[in-house]
Length: 160
Image (cartoon, rainbow, N blue to C red; front, side, top):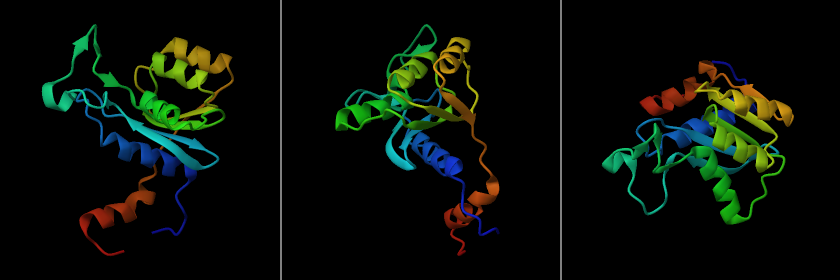
């Protein structure tokens, strides 16, 4: 195995993937990590408002193809910053799936300068247009399995 360190984009995306494992929506597990100056400032996953019933408990509350119960991972990360008084201007986000239009607008309004995503997911053309118009960069991250071999060994109980 290589002694090369995991690149920053894969490191932060792996954090978003880990966050997605906390998702309580059964339709799509999404995780998001907000980063400023190579430091994690917040994380989020899609799920119900704290104290409300979760989709995993009673099923999704779907109207017009959308689960009304769920707050998206990107919103939860932004709201965590708002709640704790953490500025988001100039930060970047790592999200497991391309953000929906509403999340894209919120990210842009919050001053996010770069959107990193793992999987394409209904990439909205208007969202893409807004991103381009405002000069925000977008990067699709690929996870290199060689960097996760050590983690896999740890998970399986092997000593490395």
